[in-house]
Image (cartoon, rainbow, N blue to C red; front, top):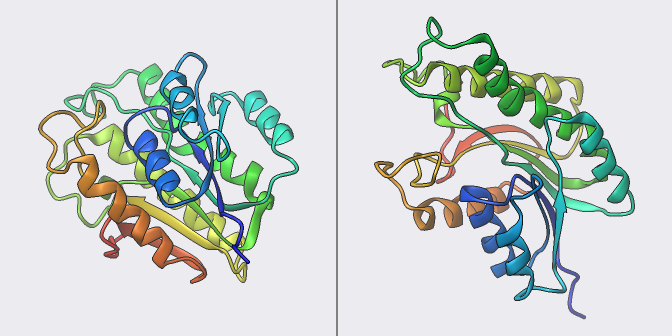
Length: 232
């Protein structure tokens, strides 16, 4: 008897890496619940024409807790194999911590650090015991690897996200689920820019291979798209 497809809730799937992850999960036979902010989901809805039975599109702005709670209510009867939060923003990479405005600092930190963890906290109980909870981190979140500065605010937001996930893992010691901090590499997207080293095709299939290889391993893993451990 054919097994039922696995289900992933992919937060931040309307463009760039998130949209590519949606396409790749679908190609691999998964059911996908893909989210984007209001006004950003047109490409996802076009993709539904090719995958009408296995792609659901939801609207949520994860910086607004009331929208996160409403999405949780709408999905209350779903069981997830994977919860993955990809949503993120950057600022002008030339801004140092001395230059950035308070408003811009708050925008980046709330979007990249606080809001993904609110999603994890809100949806964790929908993830099955053998499932995976992951967030899109970055190699730039590594303290050890920061030898040249640059992208200071973005780096700080990803380092904070890493720390919050480590605290989440500590609070859930003994939980069998796999927790992943994924570093996709520097990828040519709207956010990564045209000079990035990797194409989406070089990053995302490998990233999903790495996620699938760690299914059932439990504990917290900070990995790049090729499955290599990233130093804290």
